[in-house]
Structure formats: C-alpha cells, structure tokens
Image (cartoon, rainbow, N blue to C red; front, side, top):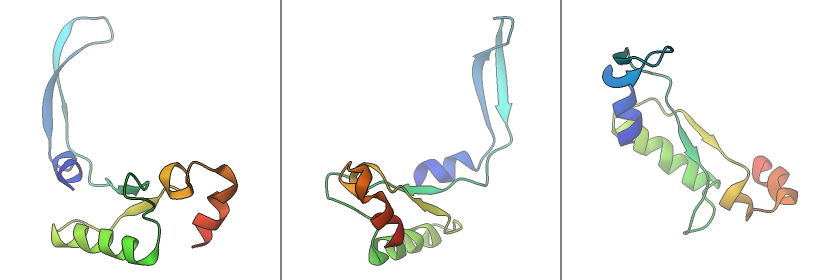
Length: 89
C-alpha cells in the first residue's frame, strides 16, 4: 500500500541521460498502480477472503481496489500444474 501511494505522486530523482551525463529526471506519478497477490511464507492468498481483504485494505487507504492474483509462486506452491486451479478459484 505504501509503494502504491508513493508511486501516485510526482517524483524527482538523480539519473543519467542517454549520453551518460548526470541529470535530474521527473515523473508525474502513476495512478495505475496495483497490488499483486503472490502468496508467501504464510501460504497462498488467492482465496475469496484474501482477495476481499486486500481490496478492503486498498479502499481504507483511499486507493482503487486494483489487484492481480499471481497464479504462480506461493499461490500454486511453485507447481505449474496447479496454476489453472488457482485461476479458477
């Protein structure tokens, strides 16, 4: 949530030009940020309750409830054969 909120704001940062010269670049912010549910050490988080809780967390922080379920990683137990079942759930 913190990263999504931060990304929505304009930022200025040190960088390099294509020619390699130092420069200060800026961004106007990105209001299309989203949360990715990948699962983790606590197990999968692709079930209905987890998705609803994630959407509510975003709403509580005045963010649109944009999220994506990653059918790989911990949500499928790193088993590609389980990905269709994760997507279906």
